[in-house]
Image 1 (cartoon, rainbow, N blue to C red):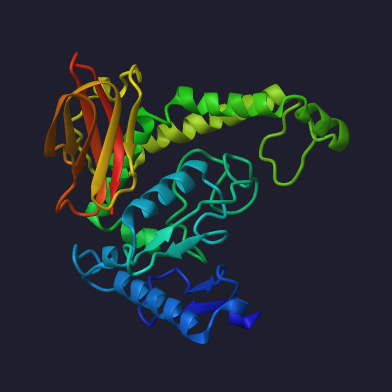
Image 2: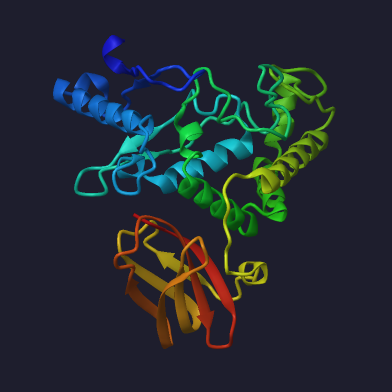
Length: 331
């Protein structure tokens, strides 16, 4: 219905990218007042106009004034890792926080990956291959990320975030474990699915790979995901120098560590399974911004103070010298 959508138009757009059409989702468009719809449309117009301006990357008055950078980075990495052919143009959810919160647009929740992970055989984007990017493929895709990555600060945070992911949740071993756990959860349902639909060994749109067995399909998915991650390891944009060593980041979680709330607007709680010697807040350049003594306790609180919004590391050093690291998003 016409009242469900709005289009943001520009006279100075980026060549190859089309003006974007947005759809109201929640509250239901029928329940929204005209002033509410106008407010959201005007806010999105301001954000996009800012992105297209010459000073879009200004730290105070650029796009970061209107958009949560942390959510945009995770959105970028997850969509690029899956290489879903619909990324940046369909099924893109976002929401705006109230003025009493951070008053910014947040990207997410992410959704719709059925045409990702090499499971596509159409289009000119070569989405079935593990190399190349999708964000810059123009057409009806969002121009946002093409612009974001022209901001060195955004690119630096992307690089750091990817490194952190690869040293924690996105290790090759963890990726395989996620797949194996999903297979275990499905159990005999996979066999019942084939019994009913006879999908194995025959093409089902838009399969790029057709396996004769579930084992072959699973191996294909694991191989594709590993290849995609390794390509991104080499080509991820930005320049990030973390002072935390790979050895520190890969220390097994001998002690249970919880950092919350995360994201935080200031106060941080650190709960540890052992005794804390020191807690450090580290920025993406590796600089220790804040160090708090643990005083042989297993729980402490501290405030991030005047730290700008962004992605940081919390490093906990125990009394016996073990180090554990968690990502912290400050808003």
